[in-house]
Amino acid sequence: MIWAYPDGSLLTWLAVIFILLYTIYLYRFYLINRKLQVKKHRIFIKVMLRTSYFVLFLIALSGPSVGTSMKEIKEEGKDIFIAIDLSQSMNATDIGPSRLQRVKFELKNLTKSFAGDRIGLIIFSSEAFVQCPLTFDQNVLQLHIDGLNTGLVPSQGTDINAPLQMALSKFQTDERPETNSRSVILVSDGEDFGDNFRPIIDELTNSGIKVFSLGVGTSQGSTIPRGNNLIIDPKTNQPAITKLETTNLKFLAAQTEGAYFELSDENQEIPDLIAAIEREEGAVTGSRMVEASANKYFYFLIIGLCLAFIDMIFPLRTINL
Image 1 (spheres, rainbow, N blue to C red):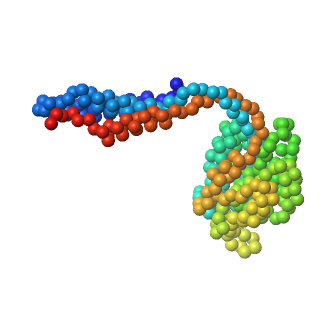
Image 2: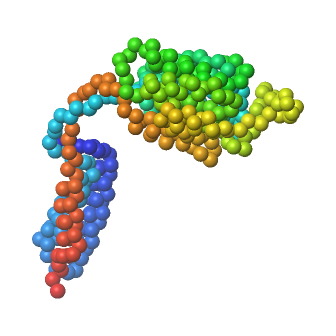
Image 3: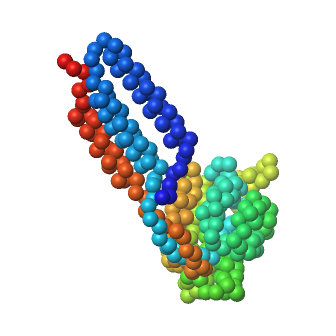
């Protein structure tokens, strides 16, 4: 027999509490017996009945599993590139503590959800660079995410075509056998994309690469800090305001059969993003046999409840009247 929840300390404490309470119960009858005639064999029946269903409850709590069988578990793997916008607007503070800092925190949790998949990092602004190639190594990914900052890339605007082209190229030249799931998680505030990314959509679609867009920021926006000052809009000579622009992010996701999600203090859709990618069918990278057993706690619980019901509905008379 296999126990699903073999927590010895919990069972011990429950048994000690039961024995303590029942000792008090028996002591009470001992005091009664000194004054009245008590039927001892009926007390014995009560003790055995209550001890029986208490033990059955403990067994049910431990999750007994009877019988074993071998089950084949297929291991699937996905390839995911995370493209992160590192333009200056990602320093905006409409999301605390800033857009980029919040993204770094969320990405560290997101990558842990895909420990069995290969993940790579692409950083971009006006140009794109592979910060980390596709890898299974979670420690390497976490280190690269920790080091993200807007000083890593040129800041002459945002070219969304660059990271998409970079991801497409890396997927096409990958020496790994064909995989069923290749995705790009595009993390950006959506500003200053222009229209130069539209031609690459057909290439992504033909290659079976889906884009899952993560819009970062708010529609109200905020100013953009630079050191102790703010970035100034040269057209108005006033502090520049950056706002979340969702149009192109949604268009990219829709055209590649991906999905759009948002990250802000009001909308936290990272769990939805994780769920959407998990639904993608990955390539079978291997299989393993595991021993499976069925938890039979239900039978012990039912028998225990029946005995408890009998004890409650049909009390045994222990005192002669």
